[in-house]
Length: 291
Image (cartoon, rainbow, N blue to C red):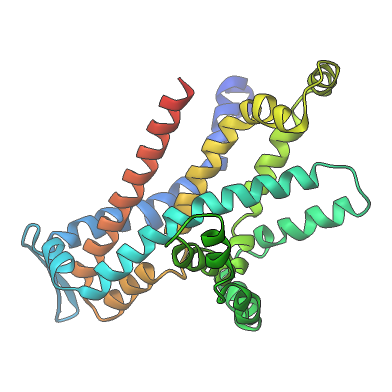
C-alpha cells in the first residue's frame, strides 16, 4: 500500500481529481471518440461484412455525393429540418422570454407554475413526448386558423396577398404548440435567472425617471439579458437539429439498420457540418451586433 504521508497533499489532491474524472474520461473515449473517428472513416469508405469481419475500402467522397444526389428522402428531410429550425427558433425564444417575464412576477401559485414549465426538462425523453403529443389532438386548436379571417383582416388593412402565408405560418405554430412548449424549459430557466439578476435599484431609478414599461424592456431588460438570448438561440438551434424524433435522424438510423454504414455516416457528418455552420454563423452575427 502507498503511504499517504510520503505523498504531498497537492499530489494526493490531484490524484483524487483524476480518479473522479477517470470513469468519465474512459466513457468518453470508448463510447464517443472511438465511434466518432470510425464514423468519419466509414463516411469515406465502402463498408461490408465478410466472414464476421468489417471490411473497409477507401472510396473518397463517393458516399457524400451519393446521399446528396441520389437519396431524395435525405435531401427532402434535410431541407424541411432547416426550414423548421429557422422558424421554430425565434418562436421558442419569444415564447420563452414572454413566459419567463410572467413567471418572474409575484402571484399566487408562482412556484407551481414554474414547476409545470420546467417539467419537460425533467421528463426529457422522446417516448414521453410521443405519448403526450400522440394522445392529444391539436387539430381542434388549429382549426381556428384554417379560416381566412387573417387574410380578410389584412386585406381590410390594405395588405393584399399576405393572408395565405400568414395563415400557413400560424397554423404551423398551432400544430407544433406541444413541441414548442416542450422544448422551451431550459430557455425559460435561463431567461428567468437573467431577469432575477436585474438590480431592483435599476427598476426604481427608471420609475423615478418616468420610464414606461415598454422603455424599461428595450433599454434595460434586453441589454441585461442579451448574453442569455445568444446562449438560448444557440441551444435552441442545436436542440432542434438533434431532436431524435426529426426525420433526418430517423433516416440515418434507417440506413444504419440496413447495414449501409457508409451512407449513414456520410449523412450524419453532413448533418453535423450543417449544425456547426449554422451555430457558428449565429454566434458571429450576434457578436457583430453586440459590437
